[in-house]
Amino acid sequence: MPELPEVETVARDLQRWVAGATIQGATVHWDRTIRHPQPSERFVAEISGATIRRVGRRAKAVLIHLGDGRVMTVALRMTGALIVTAADADPDPYARVVFSLADGRELRYRDVRKFGRIGLWPGGGLRSVGAGRGARSRRVAEGSKGYRIGEVFSGHGPEPLTRSFTAARFAERLSRRSGRLKTLLLDQSFIAGVGNIYADEALWRARLHPLRRADSLTSGEVRRLHRAVRQVLRQGIANRGSSFSDYVGADGEPGDNAERLMVYQRTDQPCYRCGRPISRIVVGQRSTHFCPRCQPEPGPSAAP
Ligand SMILES: [Zn+2]
Picture 1: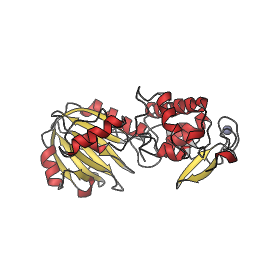
Picture 2: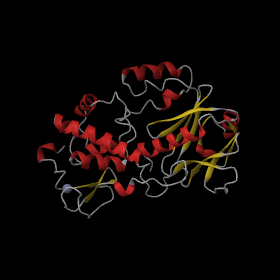
Picture 3: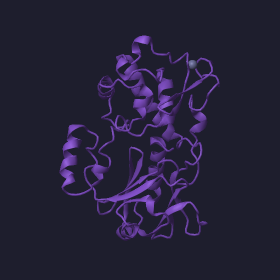
Picture 4: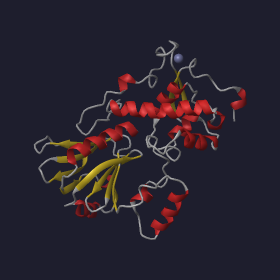
């Protein structure tokens, strides 16, 4: 499943290749991919003729900012991909929505399992989303004006790679939670964009057991985890994401980060730090990989 680095890779590719392009029309092959507006004929009518101003990312969604201020959100979910193809590329049976660009190329939304969703929204409100009290009051204000882009992300936590996501802010958020670290890192309302791969990688790098209680961390441990989360995400972006099954960049090619992972899906293989075999446990129905020596188990006092 694409996480922050994978979605960021797609967004940066699209920024390079389709910013400035005009969407001439769209064909929807799977109606349920369109979340808003509905029906899909209305979506097609509203997107046709729009110019792509820039492409960005919020949480695990690609944001396609249009020239008139509207924003198209693409949540890739399990198997979604956005791929730019030449005009004469072979048809793709898994393309659920195809945007034809005025220059002849196509922007294809491919999704084997069909869990991804595309929405087209009026702009506004995005900047302050997830910023705490301000975000909540904005949400109310927006309610009277209908659904806007800020509302779409109002349940999401802070972006871990932004400048405002400081170790102090992270410490403050962690200290108010008694949940397990692994569970919390996957909670999109706590921190945006981290999924199973990068949660395991960050905890290994920070030498913290996945079952540690969030409020049990020392300030040194919080700083380690803060640094680790940002490092593993940045490394993932630098390597164009981790591909295990369906994930590809907008060039249709898999990323290079999977073979550079330290712990994820390395069960029984030697830890790169100490040589002990990597363990696998299930936390909140998600498989979790860690080194039992480098990431010591929490003591009995840390049990709930
Ligand atoms: Zn180890």
